[in-house]
Structure formats: C-alpha cells, structure tokens
Image (cartoon, protein in one colour):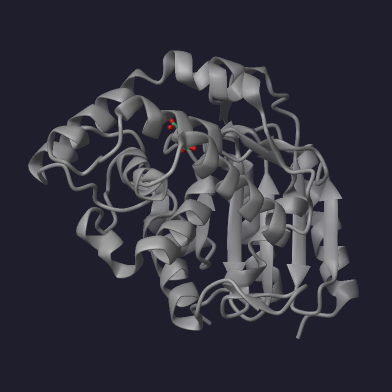
Length: 311
Ligand code: GLU
C-alpha cells in the first residue's frame, strides 16, 4: 500500500526530473490552435483509493484533452445502446496511426476500435442519434463535470473551431463510414460533436478525478453512484490497455503496464485498478502521436510504486 507521503514524494520527484529534461517531443500543430501551447509545460495528478490527491508541476492548467475524451464517449455510448455498439466498431488494436484511412476500406467501414479516430467518430454518432448536436454535446460535457466533481469543465471553442477548419481527414473517415451506414446522422453533425468533445479543456487534476470510476469498479467515489457495472469498467480498461495509444499501445503496455489513453494535446489518463487514477500532461509528442515525457513519467511512477497490472 502506497502512503500519501510516498505518493506526494514520488509525484514531486518525477515532476522535477521531467522539468530538467531537454527531450520534450514535438507539439502537434496539424490542429493549428494546439501548436500554440508551451512545450515546456508538465503536470501530473494522482488520486488514490482514499481520495488523496497528489499533484505537481502544471497540474491545474487546463489543456486540450483531445482523444482522452474517447474513453468517456465510449462509456456513454455503451450506456446508451449497450453491447450493440460492438456491431459498428471493433475492439482490436489497429497497429496503425490514429487517423489511418486504409484499414477502414479493408474492413468495410467498421473501425477497428473505439479509440482510433474512425472508431471514435462512430461512437460519437451513436451518442448523437435521437438528439440534436447541442444536446449530445451537453450530455458529454455534463458527464465530464459530474465525474470530475467540477462544474467549471468547459469546451475550448478556439480549439474546436480550429479543428473544424482543418479536420479534412476526419471528414473523409466520417463520409466513408456514412457510405456503409455506420454513421447514421448527417456527417457535419457527427463531426461537429466529435470536434467539440475533443476540444474539452481540463487540468490533470480534473481528468484524474474523472477517471476514478475506472479504477474503482465503475463507482463514482464521491457519490457512490455506479457509473457503470464492474464488468464494464474492466472491459473499458482492457480496451484502453490494448488500443489506448494507437500504434504505440504495445510499447505503453510494455513500459508502463497500465490501461491508458493518450491525446494529441499531450495528456495521458492512466488507470491503476483498485489503486489510483493518474493524469500526466506534457504537450510534446513522440512519433506515434503520444506524449513523450508523459509516457516516461508514468513509467517512472509505476516502476517506483509497483503499480503495473502485470505484477
Ligand atoms: N481531435 C483529434 C483528431 O481527430 C484527436 C486525435 C488525438 O488526440 O489523438 O485528430
């Protein structure tokens, strides 16, 4: 059992080690607004099973959560249509880039998993069906506010607009899936909701709070509310472990040993089942599009505390 003191010390020392490193990866700029972020930023937040929160560095600075939002949209879509979701999206690692198009043609418009862009767009479409885009987006945002115990969580409209202007690949993926009926709603509506949920801005602290239900058998610790059944929490964690880092998922499992989901904003949410929910943020990415120092920091943390799910 890690004591609060040990945790505080580990988090402070890791943040200090990361501050001194000069290899910081490359900040994503294919969404122009993301390119404006300071590459020197680093934040970490860990919420343990007793609710103790250890933070260091820029843990309270909001950043663009991008693809980390896909964990929460998957949770909502499963809540809405249950296992029928798996008829329109698979759950196998893709072994290709986050925005890859080739696989989609081979697999007749059914994306490999809910965390590559095509899969996440199909999941967003499932949430949208029967609603107006504004309502669907409101539901996603309220879910994030509830899970993080923080009504201040909001969408960065500048990032959403920036991605809307430049999201040609995502538009190609959505249109292609529409031709197979995998996307049911007007493509513009589905993409609008997708771009906006990727543009939610949260701090490490808020995101680590939001991830707690996955570390604790589906329960929201502050209210005791069952967000999902334990079996579903376990399965979402399994998909995070196998698919959460695109073509870098194997390396992440090998080095960190926890279910995790990265975003091109440089954040990573990682889950240590029964122990803690963790978020790290460092905007520079490696060549698989995952936070370079974020992964290194998590590797240090799990090694030091013995938190790998593989023992
Ligand atoms: N909104 C980003 C995109 O669709 C998400 C990618 C990511 O975070 O990996 O390109």
